[in-house]
Amino acid sequence: MRIWCNPAMSTFAIKAEGLGKHYQIGTAEEAPTMIREAVSRTISAPFKRLNAVLRNQPLPEAAQGFWALRDVSFEVKVGEAVGLIGHNGAGKSTLLKVLSRITTPTEGQVRIHGRIGALLEVGTGFHPELTGRENVYLNGTILGMKRAEITRKFDEIVAFAEIGKFIDTPVKRYSSGMYARLAFAVCAHLEPEILIVDEVLAVGDASFQKKSLGKMNDVAREGRTVIFVSHNMAAIENLCSRGIVLNRGQVAFMGTQHEAINYYLEGLNGQSSLSLRDRADRTGSGALHIVGFELRNAQGHPLELIASGQDVDMVIHYETTPDFNVHQSVTIGLAVKTLFDVPVFLQTNRLTGDTFGTLPETGAFVLRLPHLPVTPATYWITLSVMGENGYLDRIQNALQVTVIEGDFFGTGELPTSAHGPQLIEGHWRLAEHAVLEGHAG
Image 1 (tube, rainbow, N blue to C red):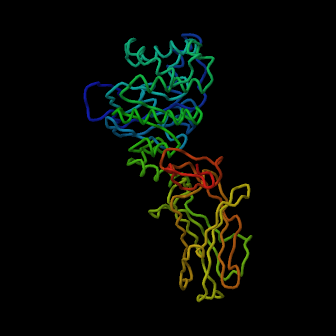
Image 2 (cartoon, one colour; image 1 turned 135 degrees about the horizontal axis):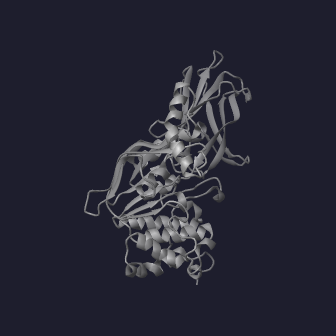
């Protein structure tokens, strides 16, 4: 295992080859209190393990472990902004700790070209007894900067962190938000060649998150390398040009940020479709039955979660019975409401003017919703099919669909459910020589 840095010019900033990190789990024995006891344990340990194997007994808990990372290989070019994506426990934080040289890998190596500034968790690299001012200089020194360089950036750091009057207070008295603001300001402004930022930005308020993302954009545009971990797919989309998806400690996918986000969203849950065959709480004649529902992306791949602003296909599978009149026209409806029973929208093929002709015995109706116009939340969906003489089938609250944050407006502004359930596109302009009717001068 190796971690080494080389400040010389290179085409890559970070290169990982076969990285693995193994951790012991379980309850370890108490530490020996005497030298004789320590020597005795060391000598007897191999024989205890052999005896357990021969007797087909499980090893003690302290001897068990797991691989947080295994055979992880990738390359990040100089000046790239890369998003690291994965569910909780996928190995993202462990990988960042290896890259930041906080921990060493069990196997493999990583080559790093450039000075690293890392913000992994609130307070990383801060000494609680030192003041904010002292910690700024301490962190700068750790990064290899001269005192004059830190002094030149000091006022800018304090202004960004918005903690001016508390800068000479020991950081142990800071709130988590103050900690996060100062820690990020130090990392971003002391000009490391490689900036590594974990989900810690979630500690700050909305305005701080927006300012921090803007600063990371500036860092990326300056040609420095950014490694960014977040569950906010819109932030990954806007900040990064490439994405790496981790799953169970291994690289599951590498590609553009769009491809990586789609891969991650498609695999969030194992269930890609929902069967509705056994739903008894339905109304209608029963000549046509809704038997299943799927969410798919614009490329036809199944989804479990969807994002605001994403192109989504809602697929409603059906089967007909011999009682179905194949010559009648049908109206398929999909109604969306919040969990508090507030209507959001209704879509039917009658509203859009779409017709289907003669229906086969089995098939699916597909509703394309371009640029999904709802805010992040979980919604109820009611499905119905009407014939010429009333409902053929209707399932109220047939299923729930979860929508996550997405960059609906393409600006990096992330609307929340507090803005209401719907999102409306629009464009603002300044009217020239506008005069309010009845108030002309």
